Length: 482
Image 1 (cartoon, one colour):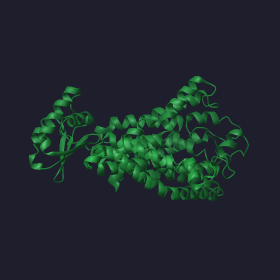
Image 2: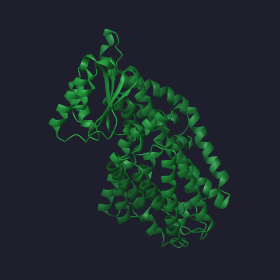
Image 3: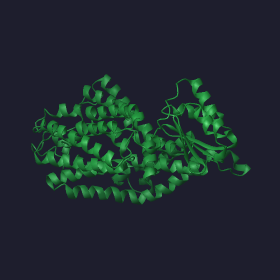
Image 4: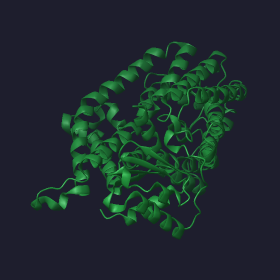
């Protein structure tokens, strides 16, 4: 099960890698025009629209990325099926469709269906699509239906599976969503402790998208709290209004970037550059704009226990800020942009103490994350089992011709079409299934300069290539006759 979640985490790296840039674009636009969100400035509108085109479609990116990453052959047909699955469930469970099915007016439809296009549904669609690809991509139908055989069958089967999933969610989703809203209303009267519980469950529910249910209770006017609206309008109690926002600033601006630094420092040597590029971009996005999904999704599935620790620390941060009545607010998210803008508002109370709190939490995050990662060998970015590179050689030289020559020699060493049944790759390895391991010429493969070879079972072999593995894998796929 843990390996399955690690594969899921690696599958999310492709869409997650584009999120920091989108977050920074939106942050710049919001900085330029924080009141009109671009309506009063064309340059702000340009940046906000460019960034939101990606951020607002995170669920779709996850559907496509997970389907591609979890399918055995990393084939485009799986990615297409992931998109198809997402479109099926979000259309069938949209507010208008549900209103038609229930024969009621759209405004009477449960609010849960207005939030059906979330990250959880995207990931679910991707997983279903990958499963359908792995099961049906090689199925041959009778001649009359031959056009729909193989990969063309995958989106069809995914559509059918997601219809069944939609039928289940039609009944289950409103119960789950409404239950969370009721839970939020119950803890809203617990003062600082309630703020802490909210912060904990807010982060814990991020992977499912259900955090929006809790947010609606505390941030908006579902239960009469309207923390964001009242804070920015100046219609509340100084030191109290804003308590459901303030504690996020120390986490998003300081805690999570420090966690990213810890993950970089604990990454394996040959993965440090790759980890650094992700953590630097994601950490800056969290600090500047308050968009933390790039950092959180980089480890929430690779090391779920560490994510629970992060959720607990978030809850503690909100509770501490609420206890001392330090308040600040946000209109976008808890990053530097909103901190500067909100710190001058009438209801902001000792907002700069949140920076002091943030520095303390940065230290806690860094040393706690670093200790837990090393102590329990958690598979954060750069530490995954599949990415261990043997120190028996160097990285292959770059250049398209070099990759083609290397791929040809490796494939010949594996036994070619007569012996190879499937070829896949992760971040640094070719993962190959063969019919007969005795027909594999390891010396031939090693002569190409690859860092190492790892035999996995009777039919599995991994060829450690390095971070250029994708280019070698592409050349291998060109050589295969499938």
